[in-house]
Length: 273
Image 1 (cartoon, rainbow, N blue to C red):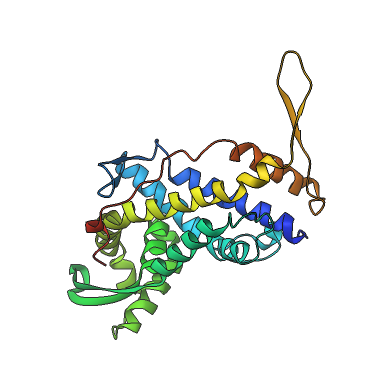
Image 2 (image 1 turned 135 degrees about the horizontal axis):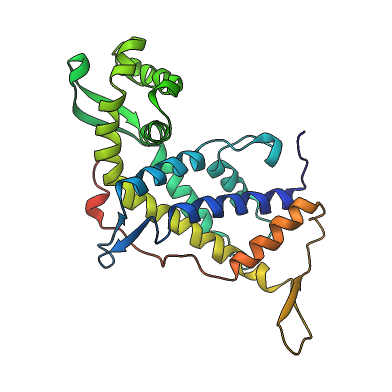
């Protein structure tokens, strides 16, 4: 079964999915913003919360289910397509979201060089060139799965090291998983986590600001002496029951601001890797 949606239905479903993923990562249970702008940083509540953040981030950076969304693409790519052809645009309300999505996609795609990585299990010290999105997804998968379910990570490590002129056997790749995780999750991901949280929070605010004009358009308050009742007038392009459900929930959610206020992370957590 593959769902078919109008362009407007697809946009609503994508935005709802993205919003929910970001809300799972950027909230006061996962961590807190400490310091003052422009020198703020995001601090996780615990190591477990940091691992959870990385796991959900992998989902966010991975492909959606084609049978549900009608296409298979990463959530960021799908959100970029929304920004390129917004259905609820009013008075340039999409601009902030568009810029935030573009900034995060560009940041993720950058290939960095991590110098003098020491992997004692295979007695290797090397400089490793790797894209940010690559090590973030690898570390998220290691956080989520036992080593016995990491054959995909083994292949990714072999590809990355081969790109750097180093051949890894299957044994070598399995042996270094824990050491790679220590370098790239415990150290480098921890360093980048504040910047990532800022990117995600900015996207979340961009969604809120983009949909404010639409939220005020369809809401109808019903006469009532006791309980304040309301309903939404669905756009003509939203016809399916699931799409209507997503629209209703999205409009309800957009009534409230994001969990965290906007914050600006210190430049000292954006200078390396």
